[in-house]
Amino acid sequence: MALANLGAVVLDCPDPRALAGFYAEVLGGTVEGEGDWVDLKVPGGPSLSFQAAPDFVPPTWPAGDRSQQFHLDLTVDDLDTAEKGVLALGAKPLDAADRSRTFRVYADPAGHPFCLCAC
Image (tube, rainbow, N blue to C red):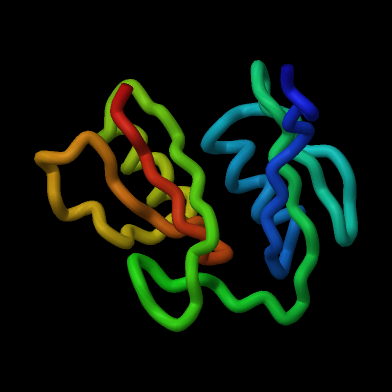
């Protein structure tokens, strides 16, 4: 028996509304809220929330003095199509050069690592 249910995953960032907008374009859903806390209500899943962190320093990947601490794995039907889309929205490739793998690693506009994973 579970002790809890996952309510949201929360990302610290300098601009919650802007980062919520990025992920709304990637995942769909509805952005709700203003100011220091913004929620992205994702269809069929828990909320992705964004919390203002004025002194936010983006993590480094794959290693470095600023640990990534976590990352999001986003499942896609077509890696090439999804890659074009996230790059157009402002993502930066971190490790997308190896085309033989079933995943590619990017940073969102605030610098959080995420992977596009072929399903």
